[in-house]
Image (cartoon, rainbow, N blue to C red; front, side, top):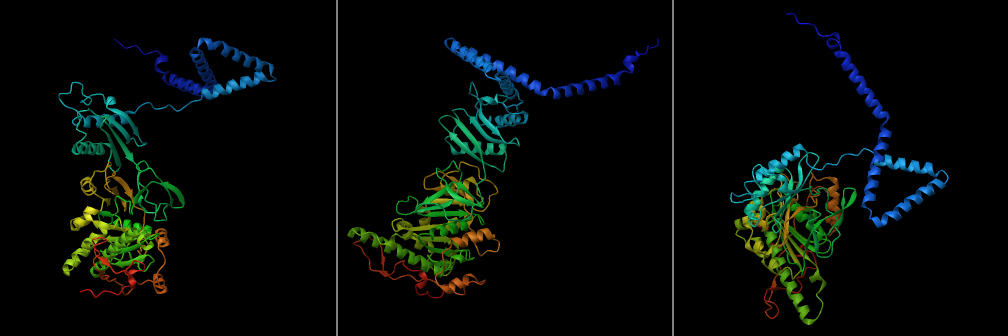
Length: 559
């Protein structure tokens, strides 16, 4: 049987119907654009009417009469005032247009990709936050993640920036190993290459995870606004300390959060030990401390590496010596030990006689020792005493004598540090790349943040005594005589250095070649024992720190 053809309107009218739909859609869009102001005003009038009705319903019955009378009075006043109805109509239309404007919808929850990320993180935490005996597990495979995550935030790239986790009470949050497993998992699942801070609230069974911003690396060495006895080691997170100082960051002045190290007679951490990897910034930290110490004290610098990192300090006012050889280092540290004893005895005699302590005793003396392990190896090869043994007196009695010791070493030579140095340096700093185990072993506590794999020079962690472990960024204080130093940093460091002792040394500072000889101090002959005052050896009365050590006779030539 032959198939009958379709009607003409159905076989040939498809193009006409499609074209008609496009014309109708275009006309509707054009009408919407033309009538958009009217639509906005109508939407606004509807919203105003709804708001007015809700306000009327929420008004108590005893207050509806006065409110109705007030509205009627306003309408009557608008009707009697010239051009009042027109002004009232314009006001109502303007309010309706503002009320009915299109607003960007506010997100009330995560999108699909963020939900998938949160669910994946929830499933990864199930093996750690659940047990088979829990009748109502908070974490279970296929469970509801909204009950476990109290709060969260994402950045523009869809990566977590903040997360609050509620975990069961039976989780062993008091064990460092259990917390480390959770922190490592969150760090891996939330994205590497960023620093996370973990705040454990054991009482409420909550864990707050926060992504930290990078610390500023553009702050150079400068005159910091500090009190006497305070030294700026670097800068940390704004919420980690309760104080800010104004600093120059390029051409602008900003408020930064400093890590202040307090020294002197009332300090609980009078000495500092800093360790790090090569290029981590320990020498920069020592140089920054020296620049601040020269503002009100005398400085002795011993460079164990012998690379000339402290050549710019040679001959400066307040710099008593800059040594890099074993012989000069031993002679300088021996003088420092005698000077510490002299300060103790002089201060004790002044207090017993009721007189104020002399000014030269109150003037701080800083002993900066960089890479002592190298000097100890060279001294042992020559059959000499380890220079660290001469730090025993300054480390033990330096706080009372206004003597501060700063030691910087690398991780591969930490085992060469003497027990006296390790036991008396309660202020610690770790700079450069380091694992959590290394940081915890050296500082005595684990940081609350995840150490990044790549860090700029001078970036690390610091702990002052029994305080918390803080992130640290040392201000840029490179060697001004290094060709790789930028002009801005070179001028910043040179501007902080004091003048030189003699015109000849000042003329050498503008030249290209370094000094041909190096003046080495000699140990001062000790005076008889003063057992009736203090049980330490003393030095001659004239062996004070009133002048630079360069005035002493040079020691014998090194073998």
